[in-house]
Length: 150
Image (cartoon, rainbow, N blue to C red; front, side, top):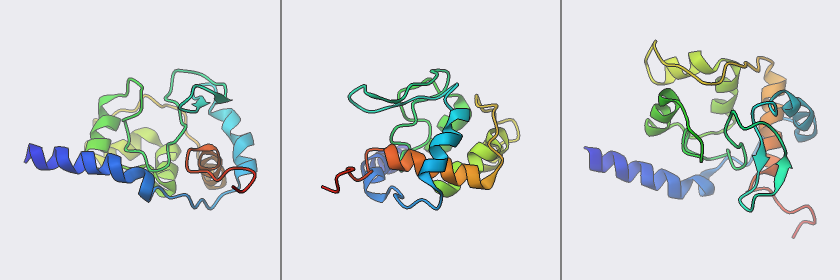
């Protein structure tokens, strides 16, 4: 059984960029402004180390979050978010919006564990801001089309 779970997780890592939801319902420009609420804890830094948004380091780097398995970026995550990733949580707009609205409650429901905890205490409750921040993160992520259209 562990072999099957490990294989499934491995395949999820390989497939994530291919299945990443590059569609976003929000407004990326408005999301850039709304991300100001997030940058106290989160940065956006590409794989080469270039800062897209210089922010805090108490939360994980959000570059490339679209299609990523939860709890797998280079960051010391809490046990509940790692468990959610092991249980198949891949970030898309719907899951992201539910998580940022109430991280602790989301993890408790996703993991079916009332004792689940989240290191993220901030809640982004407005649905339009959730969609806009997601759109912004997708727009600056590795799947984003180049500005010049090439």
